[in-house]
Length: 128
Image: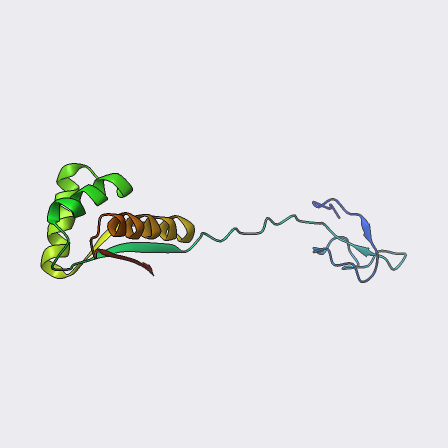
């Protein structure tokens, strides 16, 4: 009988993945296990993503919100204006979606910048 898999001997109790090979199943004539080892790569998990949100208030000027979107989220002026209007009309708007560390940094930067300019602008993040 032809063997299509390369065979070798494994110590009994080995943790390697063995595939059946040979006429005698997993054991050869000497009572040792035979089989083929397959390497499997562990699947890497994609990082969780977080939405960075701006919340509407009655005191922060619209121009300041547009500037924040341009400066911290690299939005072109037209897109920043659309997001600002969405925040103004709906109460909340998405600035972007990032990994946890990046989202946390952006929230902190926006909040610190708003406080430095004495605006009550609120920026938060939530898991997507």
